[in-house]
Image (cartoon, rainbow, N blue to C red; front, side):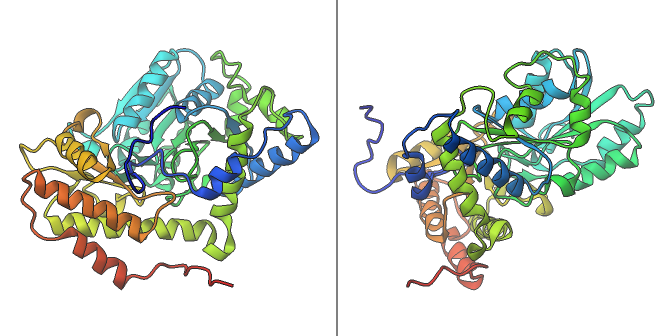
Length: 409
């Protein structure tokens, strides 16, 4: 047995923005015995999770489920819709948008990066007018796809995808819209059919509250039409074979059965009417984000995302004062208070840390995390303007949860 759980007492506080803590309900579901993935019982499970994920994506179109990480779903979206050498426009809002560029380049695509200069682009969401201007200048329609991140996990900025679709349409450009909602799905408002995405990409380890290991492509007729002429090589990622098998609830290769048990339970949790359904989940995350940002403001610190309209309900990036090493602060908080926080990535490494407020979470979970942060900041010599813990308590007390707990029998 691996000795990974070395925490002496109590539970470790995992407040990174994913993988998020897995609820006990899902852990129990994943412990069911593995079944024959070609037998009749599996077809019931397969149809259930495919139908459930359509509801979570808010789509009537097909959803493809892969036994892979979110990066695999990126590759699937690109390889099914594009051909070698195709020109793609990729808007950079942070480290994960930048990583997507690397995937495209390695696949042999011509990736053009669009971004605000310097660190400015890592403090805001996508600027749709820049996409519209660039597409209007592409008179030959050489750009085949626009790639954006819905919720940038490295910065805490959420982008308006419907506005991006509107910008593409205003430019009268035929480019496909590919959207990464890996950390947004299930936590931040996302409507695949309503926002105008052609392919939406997601993973299991964020708002779906599962361990890593499942990823998704939500499709549209335009995306499927593009896949019929796309020439990038694909086998494992191919939509056509997957969709054919999915008609009867099966997969063309061995699926991750026990994670699918967990996925079925996650869909039940997110869609449960008594808890407000998807809209209830979105409202919970918005409220948590506002409470955490109230704490950051009381400390007198900046959030990484500067646009109020783009503040993420999934995580908050906390910028350290000049001369303070954010990673040293995180290390102290981890060692003293058994609390894991997200590190700054790429351009903002060492400049900020990230507090996750997603998935299996509640007010007291966040109050504990904010207490650990406040104590750690003080021990690190950071001068605080006031108590963020008190500010968050005041916010949560004054703003009750939108959906009340179920009464005991």
